[in-house]
Amino acid sequence: MSNQLPLYREAFYRRERRSVPLARDFARKALADWGLDARTDDVLVCVSELATNALLHGVPPGRGYRLHLYLERPGPLRVEVHDSGDGTPAVRRGPADESGRGLLLVEALADRWGVGERNPGKIVWCEFARTAL
Image (cartoon, helix red, strand yellow):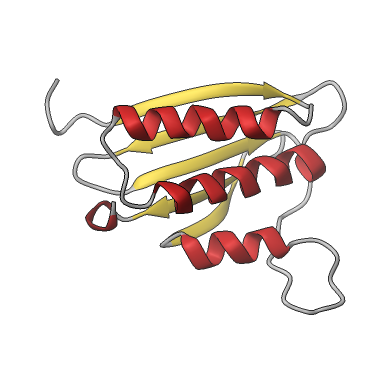
């Protein structure tokens, strides 16, 4: 395989609690297969947070979410969680906020993060620079 080809993995998870550790294990295996271990813990925390957010806020009953992992060569590792729920996730910074604190972790650990459009729903993503991996 050429060093310029992107590496890609995708998995679908149903709306159930066990999907979050399954998503984390899926990401751990992909990172190991790709030889990325420098920031594995940071990536796995972000996968957990994005999957949990999708499970709690983005997946209507009877639906699921998708986890996408992309590794561009050269380029960043990109983690995406696609869900079909409404709303835009936001970082909550106040002590009275009862949700949204998981995105504070994503904001702190990832090099970049954001929200993209999907019909229906949204894509919440984060990236990790290759030089740091």
